[in-house]
Image (cartoon, rainbow, N blue to C red; front, side, top):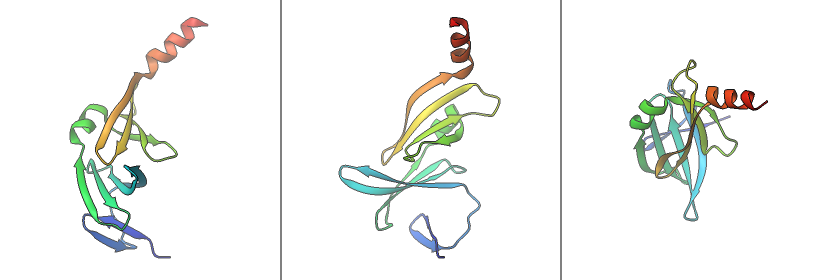
Length: 119
């Protein structure tokens, strides 16, 4: 089986890469794009459906504030970030062709404590 691997402006077949990449399809203004999120490099590569690189988005500033992705939604557009495994602060981010946006932030410890205090 041949698996395509997109990186920068080239498509490789069966190339293994050391970085942790995540791919998803995103629809924007009636067009479909392939988003490649490089977790180790803090970059999002935006490709057309035919594999042409449209944009490279660097999200270093967001990664410094919220950390690395911990989990992903089923549609591949929403990510749960946190700084470390010892951190209680979680951040919900949405990725798209224009970059990442922080949708919500919460401290799980405070939320659980508030819930326990109610009952």
